[in-house]
Image (cartoon, rainbow, N blue to C red; front, side, top):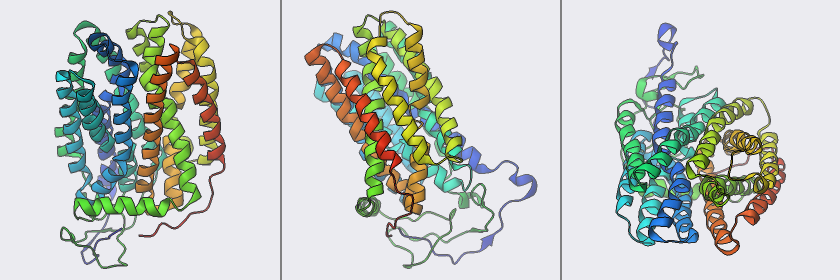
Length: 454
């Protein structure tokens, strides 16, 4: 990774009254709001699949394909987005991503064929939300915080759940009262409304404000910017909090690819990637996409099922923040193994819990699944940082890509299972078995750092 020249004046970190509220918390708050604004589409597919199927007569598999492409791009763009944030700044990449999400959601109201749905739901929204994925939370955490990282990454990751909580009931009610097109416009408005806030208040790095990262007491180096398209002298090390390297988009892509090439030579990377692929398959791919259609198959009203999924979002916030707190105190390998095992057990019981009415047993499932939904993210980020050092956020970007590949495959396969068997039972059981594999793999992740060359 290129670094900055250190030939700049040294500024002391802010002290006294000025440090009582560190600007890192303002940045984290704006990042949280941005994640909430970008989360609208994460809640949309499960709600909008039934209205689209009824209006156009498209099969579950055709609709799942658009969602699958979205999920794949959502993951595959993440490491490149992380590299672009390092090259061009967090703020610029985030604003562009929000506009792409808004454009994709707005244009979806004109679709008339599955191919057009793939272009809007799949490609545009996939690219936009992928740039606002949890790798964004990892980048913010690594750039602005030296301590409280687990807690901060947990809170930011919960932003997507908060967005689901806010948008899901609104989208469901709008789709029922006004139509799915009105719901799509709400998603577009939510993403676009956040963009000005990000542009005004989000800062790329602590040195922009002349401070060190939160919890860091070393002096801040106000480094001279490296001219665009050039690199600092080889071997020069820049302290955290200095200006990010600048370069071309191609340079960012090369950085992302070279990081993957080096990380892929380690068993640890593949253990993390396999576990997170199963995580994606059992969250976004199955529950996020197919829980509402499956509940509808059992006679439950769409709005009721959407309300249950919103409750998942409520407990997801609690579970993810608590997981972040635990990650600062407990071996993350143990946490991951426990989370995956608990998820697998709950999936085994799901087929027998669904019915036309909301029973106490399905509420128990919703609570457990909500607490466990993305509780896996803080310990996975921590392991990437522990094992791969400064390249942890970029490596996590590729691990998250595996998460979305798993989600995309599961989304399509579950749709095919539904079309051929008339129910989702086999999909739920298969997911439970995969969770057992993820628990075992996570428990065996190596404990010593590995070298990922610059």
